[in-house]
Structure formats: structure tokens, C-alpha cells
Length: 328
Ligand SMILES: NC(=O)C1=CN([C@@H]2O[C@H](COP(=O)(O)OP(=O)(O)OC[C@H]3O[C@@H](n4cnc5c(N)ncnc54)[C@H](O)[C@@H]3O)[C@@H](O)[C@H]2O)C=CC1
Ligand SMILES: [Mg+2]
Image (cartoon, rainbow, N blue to C red; front, side, top):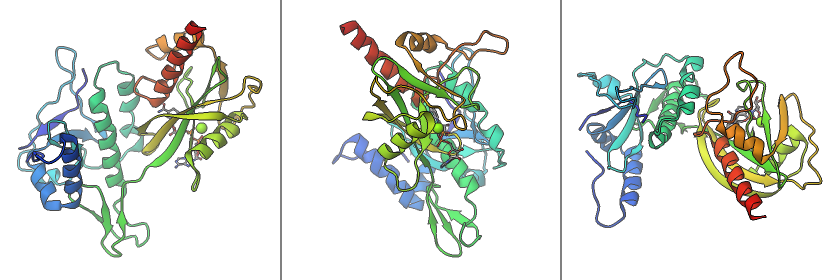
């Protein structure tokens, strides 16, 4: 079991009688974003997830689990003031994150932990969302110190959920880029592609950033047309996920179909190194590959790790296809 490193400092989400626990938690977090004093008070009794230069600090125990460990920050309240609100746990504990790496940005190293962490089979999913959210918020605060209009410093609110230009008063909110990811099927096979930047042998569903003014459906149809030269129909929504690459993408995942009579691919090799149709049998064996092949191993197709939304789309398709083929 994976657990990020966090420290417990001392006010919990106040219990309310008038609404559900979920509603009161959501309202509490919203108040912490709006009210600096309430946020400072919550920090006194918060769980603080620790990061170092944007990598979460995780600790493995002797039982091969990862468990949070209390760090002593002593009287360094200045450092605590740099912590950023993430949310509130089901136990009504406010949750913050704090980068103890003194904000030295190194974009390459800051993401180097993700491939290993996302491939780790340890069951720590409830905390993974917090880590993704925490890392994205810390990164945004660390890279948004100046107003892009006036060039003057920006100042954060207590929660770290907005920054205001000291000269113009312009308010900045955390930024993310919407991305569509789509698994295309022809009824018997599904379509996967790989970019040359992917690890060797890895294939995933097609993805692309939304252009300004586009609907999700328009992005999806455009990306599939651009990358593999097909026109899709029967689009259905699956799920969504935040993704740290390259800078806080908001991934929205869909299934889509093409007619079995129009499956001829015309791959744009400027975007994709390869794209191919995969049978259920090929997908089933690729899903079995748990660790990426090492240098010198025979070539093998493998898929995004289970925490990635691409894996979810492929697994959903394989389950549906299996049920359909068994029912035939
Ligand atoms: N979680 C998952 O399972 C998967 C996630 N992804 C993610 O989806 C994202 C988009 O996929 P791509 O095929 O790379 O997109 P893409 O097909 O739109 O091509 C990327 C290019 O789009 C341009 N672009 C337009 N808007 C951009 C923006 N806001 N930020 C950065 N570049 C922008 C750049 O020129 C960039 O090189 C990537 O960040 C990738 O990490 C991709 C596949 C699987
Ligand atoms: Mg793409």
C-alpha cells in the first residue's frame, strides 16, 4: 500500500446537522478558499502532504507498504505559509500540500517520479488524486509569481487557490489544458497509436489538446481525422482525469466507432510514429504485460499503467468486447 508523506498539525471541518457530510465538506473547502483567516485556522490542524521539488515524499515500511511519516518543521511557520490547500478528507481533515524543496524548479526532475509511481501496482489510488492535484497546484503557484500583463509580482491567497497582481489587481486562477482521449473501435478491433516520445513498445488511445472555441466532440473528430485519417461516429463519454504531463492536462475520455467498411488508416507520421488496429486477443495479452520491457528484451506491446485513463478506456473496451463475443 502506497501512502504519501504528510504531517498532522491540530480545526476540523465543523459538523453540520442541516446537510450531508459531503455537502458540508464541499462548503467548508469553498470557505477556506474565500476566507484567509478560516484557512489559516484550518492549517493548524491539517494533514500536510509533503513534496520535494514537486515530487511527493513517499516512505516504504518494513511491511513493503508506504506510510506517511511525521516531519518536524519546528517553529518554521514561514514554510507552513507556503502550503497550498488541496481539499478535505472524508474524516473532515483539511488537506494541504507543501514543497519543502525551496521552490527550485527543474521541470525534468520534477516529473521523473511519475512513470515509476504510476506503474507501481500498490493499492494507493485514494491518495493518488490528491498527489496529482497537490503537484499541479504547487507547480502553478511556483510558476505564476508575476503578472503577464504588468510584469509585477502576484500575491497568493492563504489557500493558494488564486493569485492577485499587486499593481493591476488582475486575479489569476490555476490553469489546466483540456485534452480529449478517444478509443476508436470498428466493432471487432480497437485503434491504438504511439508517439516517438512514448517508451519503447507502448501504445495508447489517441489524444489531443482542445483548440480554443471547440466542443469536446469537435476536438475528438478533428484529432482522429488529423492523426489517422478516419471519421468517427457514435461518440460516448467514459470518464475524466487530471494528468501532470506536460503541464496539468484535464483529460476527458471517450469511446467512438468507425464503420467496418472504412477502417483504412492514413497515419500522419509527424504526429504518430505508428497506429494500428488491435484484436481483443492482442489487447488481452498486452494488458498482461505488467512491467515495461527492458533494453535487450524481445519487442512486446504494452499499454499505459492502470492509473492512467488510457488504460481504463482500453480495459472498458476489452470487457465490453469479451461480453459481446461470448454472447454471440
Ligand atoms: N493519461 C493517458 O492515458 C494519456 C495521456 N496523454 C496525454 O494527452 C496529452 C495530449 O496528447 P498529444 O497527443 O500530445 O496532443 P496533440 O495531438 O494535441 O499534439 C501535441 C501538440 O499539440 C500542440 N498543443 C496545442 N495545445 C497545447 C497545449 N495546451 N499544451 C501543449 N501542447 C499543445 C503542441 O504543438 C503539441 O506538440 C499529452 O499531454 C499526453 O501526455 C496521451 C495519451 C494517453
Ligand atoms: Mg495526439
